[in-house]
Image (cartoon, rainbow, N blue to C red; front, side, top):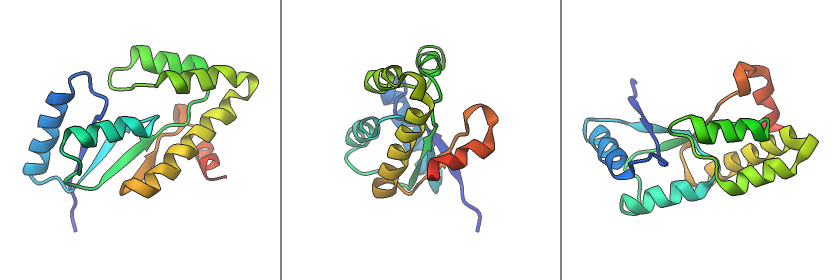
Length: 138
């Protein structure tokens, strides 16, 4: 069985255009979608509400364990398509020397949420350190 997956960005700057592109992909035969990394379920909820309350295909969310406050700021301010909510930024900043553990805890929270509402998740290892991603399960 061959499945077609497509990209989806629920926090795109032009959300109406992103929705139009997403629905065109679905119409063209997409079987599932994978989001950019998300850091707050509310971004997903707002997207689903805007497309009518139900997603037409299964979706897997990108989960990225942040490892520093500085990294969160850089991603939020310099990487198009990634939005790190202010609440997450503040939580990382307040974590001090425990920021890495905080980032992994936040990622586990997103993973737990994805289990309840989405088809799945894919994990994005911090800086290509693939072995570290396993900590998300511990």
